[in-house]
Image 1 (cartoon, rainbow, N blue to C red):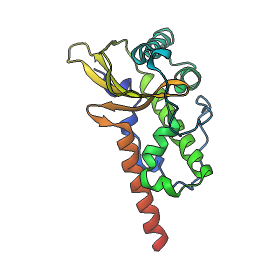
Image 2: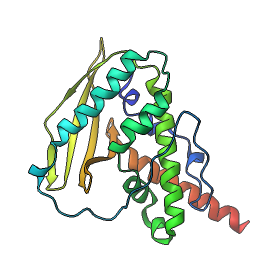
Image 3: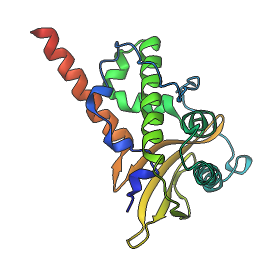
Image 4: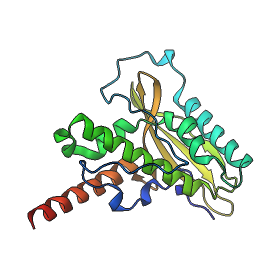
Length: 213
């Protein structure tokens, strides 16, 4: 029986080595995974919610598109390119990287931050390729959005696992210049951003320790 990590791309099982110091060069993406350009991490201008698509509709369209692709391509052919071109734009990778860097991000140059964004995006998409290649047709049910404020909300998706309780994935989204974007994913209460931040700090501490020896 598959776990909810299947559809959130294995975000909570990446190795610590993937988040090395911010000055490290970005590893090249696998041939099947290309990264999209990084957008600004500045706060978006206030928009009227009525002027943009409902965030639940946005998420459901993206998930339906992904699941339809998986049903039609059982061998995972072209999955990396599909994720990079069709699914990746729904995520706010610059924001995710900034949140993961935490206090260390204040000391980064723009170039260092961009490298971190690209590295995080490559890891994210590569993990999705690995995990989604074994998708076996679970149904997804979406709960109504829970708005924290005007520009942020959480959408819960329940993955119906045959023979077991529904798995739960919480998608945190916010309103940007380009509409609603996913900036965090949580499975079993564990946030992807919190996971990245923990390992990033660990990598930074290890780098400082190595520099002193």
